[in-house]
Image 1 (spheres, helix red, strand yellow):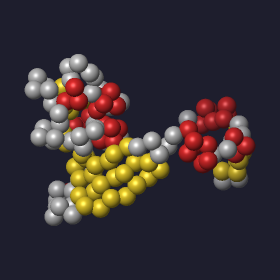
Image 2 (tube, one colour):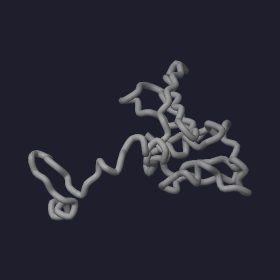
Image 3 (tube, rainbow, N blue to C red):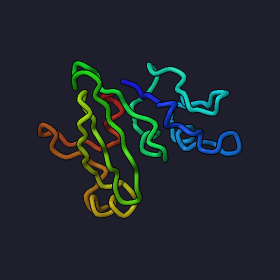
Length: 140
């Protein structure tokens, strides 16, 4: 898939005085700043499609272009991260937009999702077999 950075929307976020949010967020270190002060991706083939840069771009200049085979022609998705949620906007080839939100995975939300009592050092009853985590290494 890969990302697209709209040069008309990108303002460089104060580069070169400040490192940009998109550059700092990219786990593959794929985003760099051009001499024009606009963000650019090195190689879309190397993009992990994690959307970290998209969620942090204050100008909403970055989007994922969805594959034609999956979503049709010219479909894209953008996101904006907030402390407690992420708001996603999907746009189709006709320019119609649909938004939805997901809860943020911060420490507070994770505590409500899992409890330490649920974890043990044994995987129980996978096809009737129980193994400890140390036993799993021999199967890999």
